Length: 113
Image 1 (tube, rainbow, N blue to C red):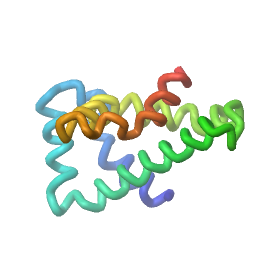
Image 2 (cartoon, rainbow, N blue to C red):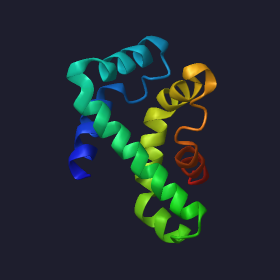
Image 3 (cartoon, one colour):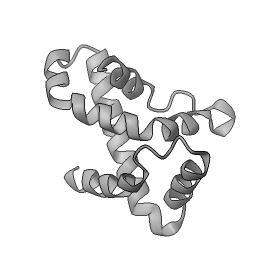
Image 4 (tube, rainbow, N blue to C red):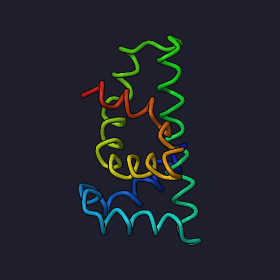
C-alpha cells in the first residue's frame, strides 16, 4: 500500500488545486488512460478503494470513528480535496451508472471537515 500511496502522491502533485479547470481535469484523466499511466491508475484506484473499504467498515460499526479520524483525517481530506472534481466526473460517467463510486469515502471525507 505504501508503494501505491507514493505513486499516487507523485502523480497527483502537479494537479493539486488544478482539477477545477476543465482542461486540467481532462489532461489528468487522459494521463491515467494511456498505457504509460496504467501504474498510476492502478495505484490511485487502489488507494481510493482502500479508503472506500475503511469507510464501509465505519458505516457497519466495525471500527471506531474517533480512532479513524485520528489516523486518517488529514489523509482522507487531502485526497478528497485534491481529487474531488475527478471523483465527481467519474461518478457522472457511464451515463450515470457510476454514481455510487467512492460514495462512502466522499461522505466520510466531507464529514471530517
